[in-house]
Image (tube, rainbow, N blue to C red; front, top):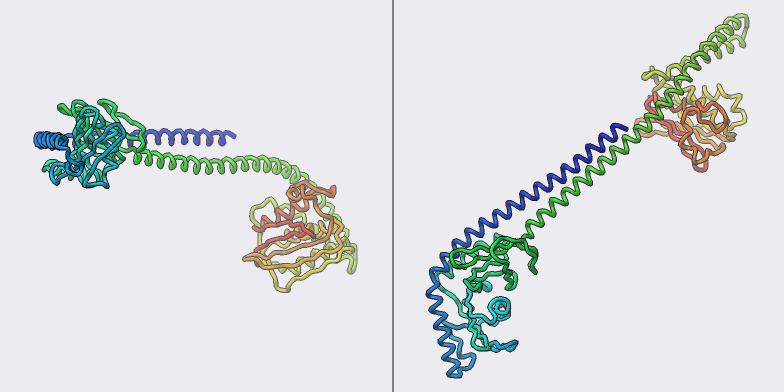
Length: 480
């Protein structure tokens, strides 16, 4: 039991180690991701800041010119389509409350542009560089009284093209979901987003936030007079954590199954050891008793041998043969305590006939049918196998069998000797015990079948008991 508890303790320590290792690995990977995000953000912000400042004045002039043209057009009562030209204005919308009237040369982008307007610059005087598909637009909103005038102008400045190229190179290989630059009024000056037009603002710092695009690592930082905002998807990080957790669960289940199997085997071994210890004690007692009996029987046999010398004729020969046979049997029983025996080729048919002849008086009411070939042999000790077969045959007539059938079959390197009878059946709850020492259903010593099993095992064979319509003992012995 100490070994079982020791193994259990080792297993629990191992599980705790795996959990700790998983925690450390996940924390290190998360820190690696976060540090990478921050480095990427600082580099990107530094580059974009320079490009913004290059064309800032020219964009201000452009916005001023667009506003003048729109005011002039309103005074001259131009139609909406007439506000659109090929340089300054590629789209315009007049918005009051929920009423929207407009016209654009890019109708395919209208829904996205209006969505950005509603979420970020509605009711404000603001202009933003907005990347839609592969085109960068200058989106400007002019708030006049109760009306918003939203203007779309394709931006083709040198710095804008360079910014576009930067994002085209970075976005596909990074986890960036959105990037924006805010002016002092916290209106977006540049806006790129892969998820509709969503831009959460939390204030300067770094945060993990839940958004419609999933969990985001959000960074806001001020450079000069502008705030830079970026959001990184944490999906890859979460997927990695999930996979490492699954791997951990797999390891725990695998080693848990392995440990359970080990516990089961150890418990089985402990039970078997206890059983064997008891069996050894019984056998020691039996060995001591049988040794005494053998000694006394041999003394009596020696006395009978002396008396047999006074006999004459056939009876003398039979008497002497039987005395020798009994001596051999007693000597063979002592061999069971050894690990090795002397093996020779034994003809199956001959030794079965010898056993039947020896028991002919007891088996006179038993019909024995044999289907044995002349030259079939097994490898073993003749005297021990003689004892084993005697006990199997005795088991049949003691069970009041009327018919005993004996036949052989070949299975691999083994000869299988089958003993089938129609005697009294063994209770199903007792089948597992029939080879146990001192177990008997007939009120006898309970050593017969146990002795058979031990003899067969000494011969590196095995014995099986099958009970259906009849009872069959199957003895497997190696070919001779």
